Image (tube, rainbow, N blue to C red; front, side, top):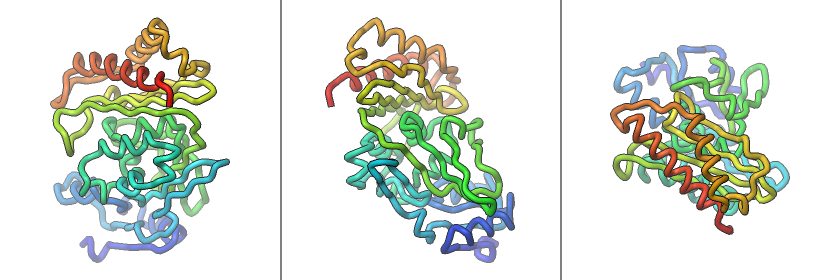
Length: 280
């Protein structure tokens, strides 16, 4: 059935025409680390698979000093980790990528897939949020740009329309310092029990994002004037941590209790703030 319903478009126009024609009966295949397993285990179903790995625009990492970074929807995590331009300008993405699964999984998994899967525990979500990421979506009606802060609607739910293809992740120039810390039960391929990402701009402005503490990743971006020097103030750090704790609502599940996640949110946020306070 899948062989008969398998398509490998070579252009964006061809891909969105297929998506538009088949609608909810089609699934997009990029890395496939979630889709293939879900199909195998009958957790999802479809009549058609549209493999977008053959589209050149979706295989590229591009960077411009004036407009920032673009990561194609089919770029795998290992390509991000090995990118010199990302290492020089967005090292927080490399830290998050190295935390995701294992080497073999990262050879298939994509950042776009991790984001569009919209798991509250996804490793790439919080770092992309503190970097002000935007999803570039394309359909037969044209392009649409969705800020990541508006993209996540619930567990495994996102803002993409049925006829849209997520083409690239766009991240503006990021002059500052980022930090990503996560806690999991075991090393290797295990979802985060909790994760905290932070980014502070060189001229001032702090953003924090937490994963596995709510149905969607939580972004806290109310500290527009805070500088790296300010983060050396223990009282201010306490106020920031209090704001974080009042903004999250974790559950207890098989990976961690609610109480553990609250305690670790406090601890990991303090660790991120301490790391951000240090000189680059």
